Amino acid sequence: MAAIIAAVANLKGGVGKSTTTVMLADGLAHFYGMNILVIDLDPQANSSQMLLTERGVQDASDQGKGVHHVLQHFMAGKPPSAAPFIMPNAVSLEELRLAEEHDKRTGWISSLPSHPQLRLRELNLEEEWYGKAGTPTTLSDAIAKFLHEAFMPLMPLYDVILLDCPPHLSPLARAGLSIADMFVTPTIADSVSTWGTKQFSDWVGKYIAPDLPNRNFVLITRFRDTKYARQVASDLREIYLKDRWFGPVIPESVHVLNAMDRAAPDSYNTFRGKYAGVTGDVRRLAERFTDFLSQRTGSTWQKVRD
Amino acid sequence: MAESPRLTPVEYIDRFFDELRSEVRTNPKLAARLVKALGGNVVFEDETKADIANPYQLAASGKLGFLAVFGKLKLPELKKVLKDNNLATRIDMNGKNADQLVDMLYDRAAAKVSERKSSIF
Image (cartoon, rainbow over all chains, first blue to last red; front, side, top):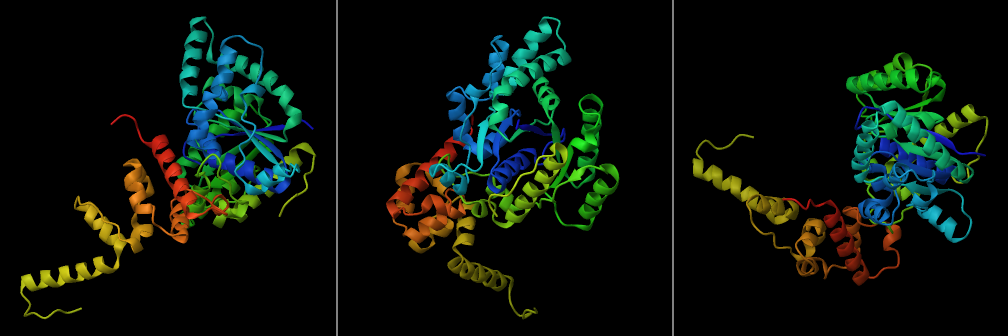
């Protein structure tokens, strides 16, 4: 079965896009044995840092791995290709590492990481493209075509490809959104995030996915349990984003922050050890997202771990 | 709580500092914070090192100073420092002796410092 491409995106910053990406990758790989590729399209490289550590991100870049190298490939007019730029191992969970060691791979995470250089590469590309009378739309269309062809050989290897998108519409981000099968929208239960989410939702619905409600999985993150936040969350479900799929509410928690801070590139933890007090939330996220995938694709996935 | 009206201002201040002194003797974390706030150097006593010493700060100032503080810690104390500072998981520490944990503590703290500290001051 070909991989499903899910873009984790919202134009509002600070809503937990990278954290959601990593929690989904861990949850789907751990509980359902899915092979996951995380593609970081954000020059802030936060999900790459969470998966690989800062040193890991730099090492990857030095080894020629990363989205900025893919973009360089595109700029040089070379044939579409992504596989050589992927870090094949971005696993931090002890259970997955042990399974691999015993040759019983049930769930794996690879990374096509980002690097802060990505934004500079994008700017160079934009200057060059617009200098030849190109437009932002023709550029994002050309990148989308390149990525689509570059990912084709990878599709049988993965179950889910997660695109961690930046909080802006760069040509690369637009290209990523346009090749996505579905959209995960993390948001926060407050008024500014609700408005930002509406803007993003309208834009994607108009330009990318007219059937957005069927393709959109919404996640309320960094939730502080107050009367105000409960009201906003309820309004999101019942009014503003009615008919979307909602995941479990992810609490604002030091456990989430700790889980995203990998001690070293060779540091491993059990799922329960990594997620501590939010273990159940991440498990429910994986379950609910898998239900969403099943509803969208007609395929089913069985749990391989509890 | 009512105070005797016969105390002088100096006696009130004395009482305040007596309380502070008493707290500082029994609360090493507060003591370290106060001394740092006053610009002083914190001297780590053996029994309080694991609670007070900041491995990132000490790693940034050199390995000798780092080892002077963490080099003599016992295995459980080293594990606590590594865990409390998010520098290792239980899995990472399994089967390691104290020397190996000190090395891990220094290597990982120094790596984080070099990755996160700005090169421009």
